[in-house]
Image (cartoon, rainbow, N blue to C red; front, top):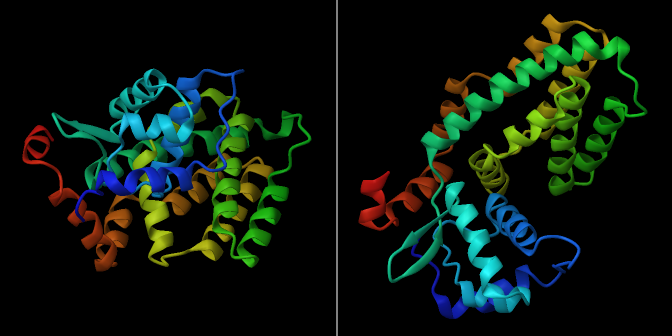
Length: 259
C-alpha cells in the first residue's frame, strides 16, 4: 500500500477529529497522544499514513508544539517513524512485535487470573464480572464490535483490579498496540470469534468466582492460547497476512535496515 498523499490528509483528519474536543483541564500532549494512539491502534489511521504536524494541529485546533511532542511519544512506542525530509508515518504492522506483545500479555494475564482467584473470597466491590459478560453478550447480538472490544478490555482490567495489581494493567496496555491493531484488522477482514471469546470469558470468571487458581490459570491460557496458535491463525488467513506483509514492503529502505 503506497503511503497516503498529503493532499488528502486534511480532509481525512477533519473527518476523524470532528468529534474530538480538547480540554484546557488536561495536558494537550496527553490528549493528542491518546487520540492518535486510539486512531492508530484501531487502524482508522492505516500503516503508511503521513502525519503532518501542520495538518494535525489545524485539524485539532491545537498548536504544533503539543502535536510534535505527541508524535515523539508515538515514535518511542513504535507506532510512527520519521523519514528525513519526508515526514512522519504510521508504522507497518510487525509480526515479530505482535508475537512479543502476545507473550507479555499471556504471562501477565495468567498471573492476574491466578491471583484474582486467590483473593476473590475477600474482595469487596460492587463490581460484578458476570455483568460485564452480559453486556458483552448484548453487544455481540447487536453486532457492535467496538462496544464488544471496550467491554473485553474492561473485563480483563477488572481481573487485574481484583488481583490487587491494577497498575500492572496500565503497564501491559502500553505494550499491546500491535495486538490491538491486528485484532482490529481481523475484524475488518471478518475474522470474528465473539461467541468463542464469551465462552472463554465465562470460564475464567467462573473459576475466579470459585476461588480456584489452577482453573483460572488454565482458563486464561486456553483463552489467550500459546504463541504458536497466534502464528497459525495469521497464516490461515492469507489475505490478512498479505496486507500485513505489503505494509512492510512500503517502509523506506533506511527504515528496513534499522529494523
